[in-house]
Image 1: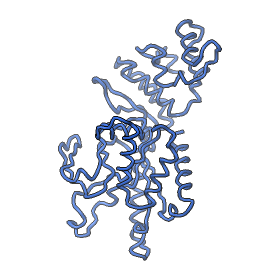
Image 2: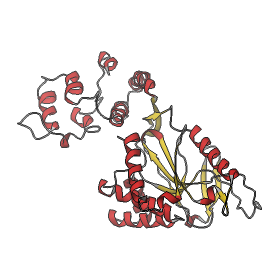
Image 3: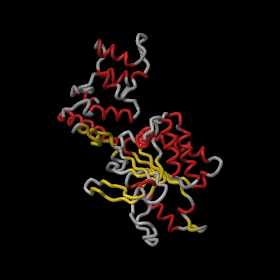
Image 4: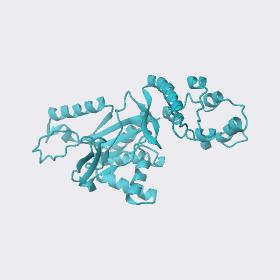
Length: 347
């Protein structure tokens, strides 16, 4: 921030000052410090637009307290000052990125191109130390029947098409925002897909469809308990995506005569959190570590090996024993886990 101030950098770019700030701060919901105005927007408009008795240093450091806001909010601020709607001068944008990335690097973040608008790049904050490299291209999930048959329609761009059994899975075909995939985003996508106008109706329909893909009672309890914990958040919480394809072998086990070439083709649950953080949740039944009623060191070793590979790629992997979700405290265990998960990655 200090270096940008020394450069006499106009954070708002070509936007009106208040318009820019509202892209990051909910000014209408923030209390005024002046009895004459009902919210922070009134304060700022009076002292920064109508008059000039506040300077930008006071605004950001004293009034908005930018040094103590949540990390995600600060990263959003960094993203916005380089957004093409804020500044479309490529040279100015480049200088901004150079300064911002130099300072973010110490915390493991950088602004990286994640999208574009009218030919101008949009940059998002990426955690390059812990998050997986690259962007999600294909999100195939909620598999509840025959395995989909997939062909690559453009190998250069990694475009795929499901040519058979597409009715047994869902394919999210929109870009994943830097802020992660929220439940409301998934509901809106489902509403468009199904032609449903009412949000609540779409939400119920999507929940039923996702729940249908779950194969065990512990998985269903985890899914249901998650939504119970966040039902008052009005969709503003990360989507819990079930049965997500991670790897894909086009052949069935019957065709392969029992040979396993690709392990863990699907994840039980996936969450796409802000800053490219990907959380995998697995609910283990005894088939994960035993053959029949006999424990299997081989199966257990294969499972932890796959976990290791995912973690090395930057995924966060958490496992639940199926048994712990069948006891009376199962729901409480799940709700407490998600509360801690949100505090770690979102708060």
